[in-house]
Image (cartoon, rainbow, N blue to C red; front, side):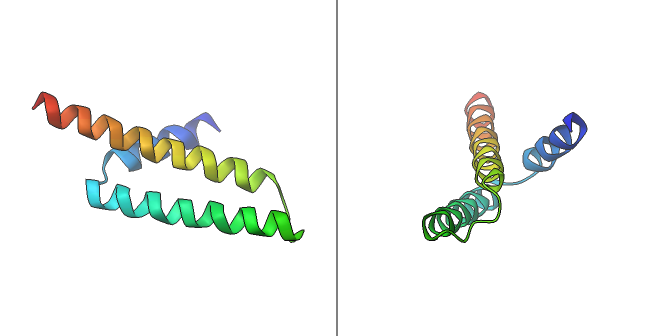
Length: 73
């Protein structure tokens, strides 16, 4: 599990600003769809929502790290 997370962090660190913004929008849309499925009783696993929110947090953290690195340069 920890190996998979560090691999995801490396992938996110390699993405540019535009890719991170598009991934953020994609994840927000996915979370919205999961929320709608939850409200209508169609959601298969509530863990999917938690995983999507954590992935969104990782992407936003990578965006913040990129912005901080750009300010230092």
